[in-house]
Length: 268
Image 1 (cartoon, rainbow, N blue to C red):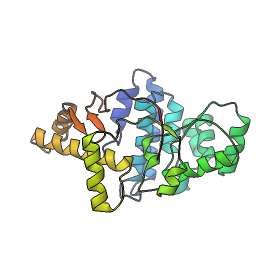
Image 2 (image 1 turned 30 degrees about the horizontal axis):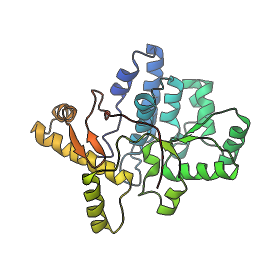
Image 3 (image 1 turned 60 degrees about the horizontal axis):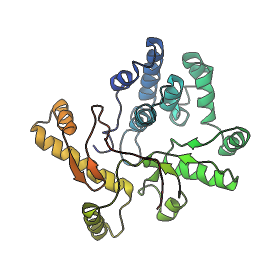
Image 4 (image 1 turned 90 degrees about the horizontal axis):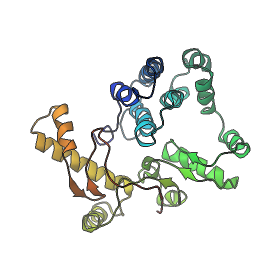
């Protein structure tokens, strides 16, 4: 459940974008959403969650966290892994349904990373934002450093997943810029670290800490609502205001965590 709470429904996506996009653009996003959902039907991540949920989480980060409302970019985020699971959806089909720019983005996802690095070296860019699985993000970081491309690299918390990368690999992501929704400090954090190490024989990473707080918040909301009804649980979540392992936990009306967030360099 903790993995699925960030899953973004098409209705929520359209509601978040309605004031920024035309009905025609919203309809194209719905088409991409339904195409991706159908193409990835039954495909699972290593943790057992639906692969399609991963795509909607990327779209959610673009829309709700980065506040980017470019419909072509959102469509590309939903479709970017189609070539891995469905060979019947070709570049020509993407072009016909969503236009040449989305096709360009789609085709770039299939290219060798060295080609991508060549393009980055030639382009006049000020930074890079990664929306990849941890292993793919690590590959890109390694390549950038081999090419001596000293650009700031931004990424979501998910690329720092200690369950997907070893401690040594996480050190290679040193100084990646991300926006933590809390801090691992205080007595609760210390107690959590001690208990985690006692149970699992290692210190917890950031993903473990946020997962712990997320599950506790969800369980509190279920108890408070006194019902298995999804809407009542969501309403109970909006009323949560407590101190967790990662700091103060409270949410806005869209379900995003509230707080004073700043861009921070990752330090393993």
